[in-house]
Length: 307
Image 1 (cartoon, helix red, strand yellow):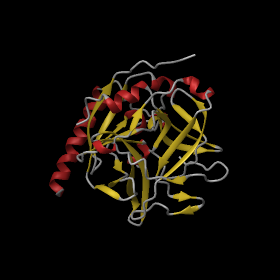
Image 2 (cartoon, helix red, strand yellow):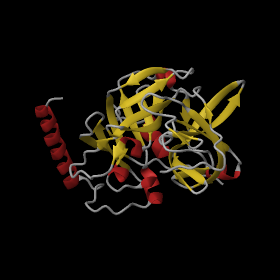
Image 3 (cartoon, one colour):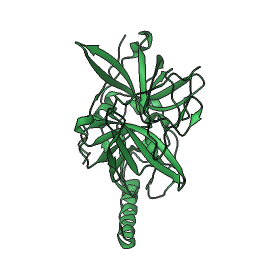
């Protein structure tokens, strides 16, 4: 991209941002955090960024879908029990750089032929805040693997990044989710269903699985770098469920962020995986993720604004 084109994009971005600040009822000038509970049940505004430059492109609002109800660092709980597992080839590795020498690793998973789900903090650096709503992209490359652990697709051109306004502007951790769009066809890697868990799952003794690309395993760093690729799967019990989070005991460390938290079910000798949350953070003796709600299903699977 030449300098003149880049300047034009920044001017256009600034103009769009100004219009939104003037016209949109969803963008208060102050940065007071919204209630996470109310956020889950209200309309959500999303910002669209250019996947390569981070320039703000546009915004849109998805109306709330009624929730169905029924009667950042991450931690290792005791011993690290994760195992190498490349069979979940719908999980992808995100790679970027905080500086020229320090690779930043994250995870994501394929939800549609050109769409990848991940955590917002994996794709957007929030500081320093940009008055024109541009973001600083966190990733430059997406790696897609086959079942043998070989890199099958290397994506160097991210098309778009969609992030909730509540995260981009307010830093609302309950809205730590995002989607990435790419030109490459990922149809062959769509192995995960998305499902919204009922509250009663807390009492079911269900086991959840977490698959991704941690930078640390068994106190050893650099198991995942820009050239070294190892996918791990851990498992643990669901500990609690809130309106916006799944809290669990599956081992996770940095690099797992953005990966799927999912249930595994076998029927007629075939195994099915249903994602119920996106891994985001942890602490103490538990890890957590952004719960899949009907609103997130709408965002990922029925979103008319994905180009």
